[in-house]
Amino acid sequence: MNPTRRCAPELLKQDLSGKIYIITGANSGVGLGTARQLVEQGAHVVLACRRVSAGEEAAQTLATLSGTTEVIALDLGSLSSVRAFAEAFLERHSRLDALVNNAGLMNTPQGKTQDGFETQFGVNHLGHFLLTELLLEVLKSSAPSRVICVASAYHVEAQGKPGRIVLDDLNFERRPYDGWEAYAQAKLANVLHAQELARRLEGSGVSAFSVHPGWVRTNLISSTMPSWLQNVVMRPIGALIDLISVEDGAQTTLHCLLDPQVPETSGAFYAQTGSFPDKQDRKGGWPMTSPNPQVRDLALAEALYVRSRDLVGLT
Ligand SMILES: NC(=O)c1ccc[n+]([C@@H]2O[C@H](COP(=O)([O-])OP(=O)(O)OC[C@H]3O[C@@H](n4cnc5c(N)ncnc54)[C@H](OP(=O)(O)O)[C@@H]3O)[C@@H](O)[C@H]2O)c1
Image 1 (cartoon, rainbow, N blue to C red):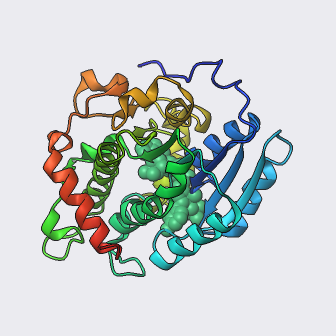
Image 2: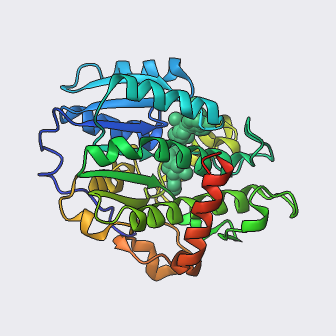
């Protein structure tokens, strides 16, 4: 079993008062684990949640820590909700130290977002893409600042389905839908997004990274396995298949947010231990070279960026 990577203890004690972070999907799992650590260190964290009530419940669990939180509604499956979130945030705040594009869905049944995009591509990539574009100015004016795109080891291959961007069929309209293939495509889009963003933002003081958080015990599997079956199957075998805690699952994101050397590697992929297809990659790396050759296709990263701007109505 590969040892879990941990953010340096001194970085997790640093005083973050005065810093403002946005974390999408912060009401559960890795997002909540990341929020908890930042609030513990005195930061103000905006919990961007599609279910405000779940966000408020999560905020309650952080209320005794030294920092502060605020819940703002964000449904990444609706571009108008993304715009409303950005407006609400910018009305209240004039700085942003980091945006953590963390929310995600995995292996969902075929479906569409409110704007007609394939669900996983729409929520995991396009919603976050628009959010990032709308917050770029405040990130630049708050520099040094960071954008973290929480991707996955599954951007290489998900349950035997290769991670690939099919530019002329991003929404699975001309190929048979497969929930794992759609997840792999969306997570590869997260990796390419961070990489192309870093290239475009070179010299601006805003750095961008993609992250594999590890195999973490969270609700992400809920579209694949109902919760009663998770309790019967996943909990007992969790330790055997290397599932890590939410606290450990937050470490890679926290390292990318807090480590002073990380901006020198802007655009890179940071991975906790994980089930990469090749055994030697399973120890992860901070940073690591993605085993997916499409990640080295800079023209593809640029084309996806341009297409994404077009799809979210920014051209
Ligand atoms: N867990 C793992 O082993 C693992 C491995 C690799 C990568 N990841 C990545 O880690 C990230 C966090 O996942 P997790 O494991 O912590 O799972 P999780 O506990 O299910 O958290 C996912 C979060 O995303 C939110 N979300 C889903 N759809 C949304 C939408 N349309 N708009 C806004 N928020 C939405 C969920 O909100 P609701 O509570 O309302 O559903 C939830 O807060 C994801 O990007 C995932 O792909 C996880």
